[in-house]
Image (cartoon, rainbow, N blue to C red):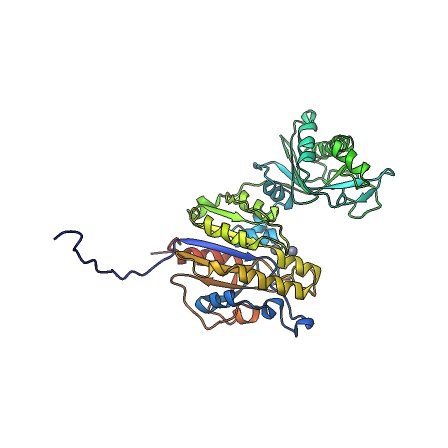
Length: 425
Ligand code: ZN
Ligand code: ZN
């Protein structure tokens, strides 16, 4: 019998997905908002795509770190990736530095930085240097020009979004126990850098950091960009404010811990940095801003493309968090509606366990993160359906996952793609 004529009987197979997409809607959770008829922005938003995923999947609510713990975005994302923030979180500086493209090695000290304006009276005139952006030329000049070889320190300095930047020191005997020069408000002189403990490492690092601020200020003060800004009546970016010092720790790479390669898509350098410190590749997307005007469609396209290469992908969408911080429930609701529309291509992803969740709540009434648990849904092959038909806080709380903790989420997803290890015989 020829192969051509052979009748192939379809073999019924029980499908198991092979890929995991974590979609983290930053700050999505909220509390009842009076201006939305006491609904949360998520409940008030029209979300047909998320509701369809919730209907076909399993839902729950989640304490990203633990009940009553108010997470930062950084500690929340570490926890969601299965890294205990209580042991491996070393401050925001190293994460921002890594997210800005500096390769942080264990022992390096990272700092958050921003360009600011020092006026002629020696006071900070603008903590954001007139909201300067596209500062790569200035940052290159600082990185190349500052010489801390006297301290045995190699300097890396990179621009972040807008007026933001990141600084890293590499050298022997350095410490993160140093203070900031940021007076935190305008009209005050920059603070003196001090060691925060009496160790030789803290004293050496504080002297090196003070020298960095001195030398970078001289480079910036005479830079042609600042001369042009002064001539145009714009605020000069002539001082760097540093804060959030942290020492880079040693984190077990994601690929070794879970046996799968992964990537991260995020506009926020903090989140990209978290991905990179655990060895996730970062995938750039044009036009993403971390704000409500972000390029959502481009992000979703990049995600579906990345899943061809990476079996694990974390995508963070930031805008709803910003609306929560600004206390704008209507804006938050409308942005969630836009997110939902952009997610349509993810509704029929094959071979993928799709996890949608928040990293924390950012209630408009609080204008900051809260410990209120976040909604979570899991959709894909093999997932048990529950009765939840709406992706919103209280609806999800009635779902089949019940109330889970953040560090449980990845193990649940790994089990659905047959990558969990059996405990016992
Ligand atoms: Zn967040
Ligand atoms: Zn936030």
